[in-house]
Length: 58
Image (cartoon, rainbow, N blue to C red; front, top):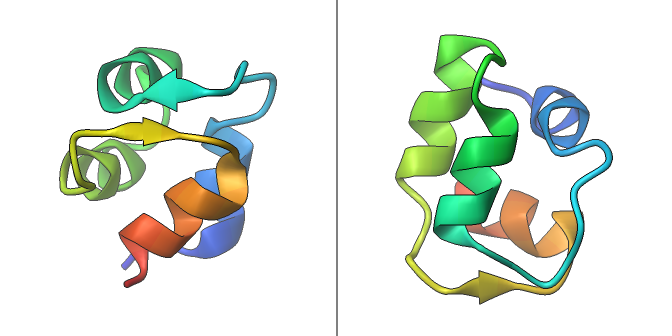
């Protein structure tokens, strides 16, 4: 299970708004559990890291 802190670390330095694809590209190279969790988020644009975390843990 991935933690919100791991998600935030993977998204550090990300420019928003960002699409799911941009988020996945940015997180590439992070822990595989983090990438797996991000692959499950809705394919839409996110305004910030809190929105991404909400989508992961919803």
